Image (tube, helix red, strand yellow):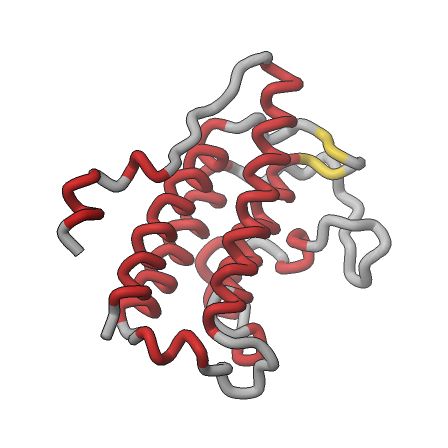
Length: 176
């Protein structure tokens, strides 16, 4: 049975659409708490990459080869170990898009292989269920989309596009 997984996949598509809107159109150089917005967006993508599936079975090596960005740029708080104090380094939009494309492909392949029963299971070595990991990333990603949106509005005075449930055609919702 995949009824819940199909809903999750639809909601994940909406989440990706909102994330891409920020990655493609937000002000990357805006500073928030001494960190530029490009790093917050990188952090958001990195978190989806690492925590959506199983952070206890994760390696950044493949991503680093793909985009060439030190994983520590995802650390956005000066109080956290490994933080790189490099506020002048703005991660290029093309790198963020490439990383997001990679993560989207990885997550879509993962969701394509899940059943509803799997949502209640804990990935190997992980203290959280698959459903908990997915919901945590929805919350975390939209928090960072909101931060990016606010920083962009503060700089330019305009809001970026936001996508909600209307993205799923009503006919698709009623046919399930």
